[in-house]
Image (cartoon, rainbow, N blue to C red; front, side):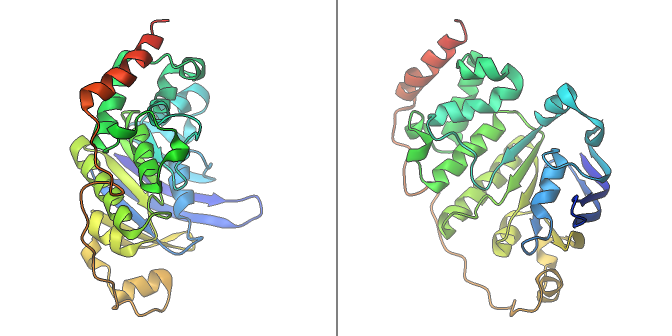
Length: 286
C-alpha cells in the first residue's frame, strides 16, 4: 500500500537525515520505527506526508506518487494520512469535540471549520469515535483540562475522523506513564485492526514496540539496520541499532485496565449526544 524507494533527506547544512530508505508497508500492518535519538525516525514519518520534503527517492501511497504532488493535490492526498503527534497538537481553548472535528479541515475548508459548520454525518462520526476511545464523558471539556492520555486519545479520534488509509504516529507515548502508554498503544493497535489501517509508529520504547507492532524497523544514522518481526529483535540486533548495553535485562510487563487514566465513561450516551451533536449539526445549516 505504501512504498518508499531510495528515499533520502539532506538538509541545507549538509547533514544527511535519511539515506536510501526502501520500505513497503502492506494494508493493515502496524510497523514500529525504533532507533536512537537523531536516527531519522521522525524525519521519515514527515517525509511520507511531506511535512518534510525528501531530497531524493519515491514515496507512493497506493497509485499516488506523493513526491510529485503540490497545492490542492497534495492537500487532497493528505486526507488519506492521519497524523498523531507526540505533543498532541490540540487547540487548548477548544473543546474535545471541536478538536476532533478539526480532523475534517481537509474536507470542509478553514472557514466552515472556523464557524463550526460541519456536516451532520461528520459530527455523528466524531461522537462515535469519542465513544470508541472512551471520552464521551469529556466531549465539552476544554483540551487544556485533560490529562496526557486523554489528550492523546483526542488526537487519535481526530486522525481517524479523516477516514485515513494510513496512520503516521510520532512518539505517542513519550509523555505518558507506563500504564497509559500501554493503553494508548493497545488502542492504536485495535483501531488499526478494526479499520484495516496501516500504521507507522515512531517509538523509543522497545518493549512496547515488541508487544504491539507486527513489524519492527530499526534506524541508525538515517539508515535501516534491521527490518523484521518483533520476535527477531535479539540483544545483538539491539546493540547494532543502539550500541552496547545489557539488553537481556528487561522489566516485567505490568497489568492494566481497559479504561483510560482511571476514568470511566459514566456519562449517559444519549444525553451527551443531544448536548453536543444537535447544536454542532445545526451550525451546518446556517
